[in-house]
Length: 542
Image (cartoon, rainbow, N blue to C red; front, side, top):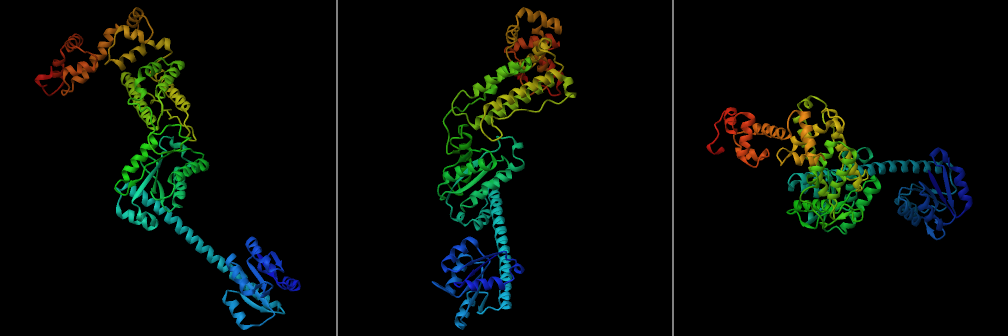
């Protein structure tokens, strides 16, 4: 603790220093000055807990000194010393919260008693102030957290007016809001494992909420379904775009994570609140992925919005590469697929999310087809987990090479699964198993000896001769058997017309389908249906 002694007579300062048992009161720093002009600077810089001052200083009266100290550093306790016993002056000094008024010559016991009282008063007031500060802080934090919770409830409960009224009690500026803007920071495009430890998503949400809450006119919370961070702005809040940029920069600096922010235009509140949310989502999903230069997205970025994800257009190449299992072939197919994805301008987050959905569906269909056509696989090891990742580094930055390598790893894992679990060996050894897989997967399309030979870079004569030698069946017969087997499954459903079944299993001519079916099964499709269904088919099934 610090004490400041103020007196224009140096001997008085020396007497005070000698008379007080400073160590007893926990005072380890003693400051002194003989000039009233030095007092304001010393009070500001040193902030002493105790001031012992003469009443009459050149240029500054005792009452002025007390007022000045209380203004600069209110916690300081003051003891006045004087050679004059003016009652009115003493009373005024004590009324201004001066601890004591001691007359000269100084009495050791009286001075120490006054110092003890001053230090005790300081400690009591400091404790009370700390309690009040803690209470105020706790109350503020609880209010801030409650406001966030109320916004989340309002957002997810169809904008209930009762919840909104409670939120306005905490943030009065919202009570007059006639229009709003919505900001959204997406996180769902990044792997969930990134949001752990010091980068837990709740910490990021609270960090953004703190920045918003300080304005008194904005608030943030996490949307529990899509994991995105939603911000509500009072449209009268000044310079909202600049605040959005500050939020993006602060998140990047604090968490080493880059998140773009989609911002809606102003919308009437509360009637168009939901529209504003959709506009913000649209803004962030349709912005160009090179958004490091423009982190806040206000509207659509013109460019290619693919109707069909390229993974569908490239299915043949990807599937063939998986069957062949050659690393170079898989890499080439992936690069062709991604080249198709990025061939236009303005690649967007929405396009990437569509790509991911399409790829996951395609992957599931492939594996299910493999397992269905190899019955023993059902009892063996489970298919490999997905390695697929969108093109974002761990810091959230766009990097297409991340998706390229993850696709290559994933397709390679699927290929290894076929080789290991389904018993497929090296390429030269499993060529005809690959051809069988190809037929099982593409039986509904136009298949011929020539088209399959071209697909696998073989001559028609070699394929015809070798396939029959390896499988015991000609390739045309094999194709027909696969198709007829599938047709038999479909015929057991009386709701599907026979000419539709013919088309679904790869026959454009229904009569030809019936001839092949009867030759293979020994009865017509209609006879098979009657024999295998309890309900008689309608007359127009043919």
